[in-house]
Image (cartoon, rainbow, N blue to C red; front, top):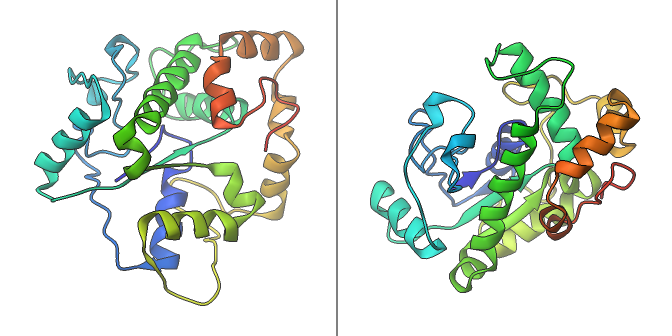
Length: 232
């Protein structure tokens, strides 16, 4: 199972897995968004922060084992492994707001910091970190960062191969130039992420507000700086 918030790189990761590995099966359902089979499923407890009605759910999972058992029941599989992708929060927030504009999300506030999006980032990542840090989660969950694929593709895909015991399709790894719902990944776009150019889209006060709303424990555990000056 693959999970991540929208604009975190879930489509990119799915393409990477299919392009580079064999001997595995993704069990995500891309249609029923209110069930934990969808890659963007909101498993956090605070359901009033779920951004769209199609993702609304009343499932509360006190621990990873209860979530895992529900997934096994729905997929009818004997066992399951999980890969979770996250993105640097400032970069993610910019992309998420662009998605809100593109799709005319009713709760998006133009020219204001959309605190509900940042709170959702905290909640989503915190719940998965909690699951990951549990005894059962250590054996079944792998958390990866979108930026790590840009910084060191081979080492990051090697982590996935070792964690899940899957086979490489080819001697060398490759990365797709384009994935669904995203533009072609050009050199200019790579530089945009690697040099943190997304920070230029915010004023100093906006960056201060964003940093103030991010859960520092979450960002530190994910390996992100509390500011936008150091990304990976």
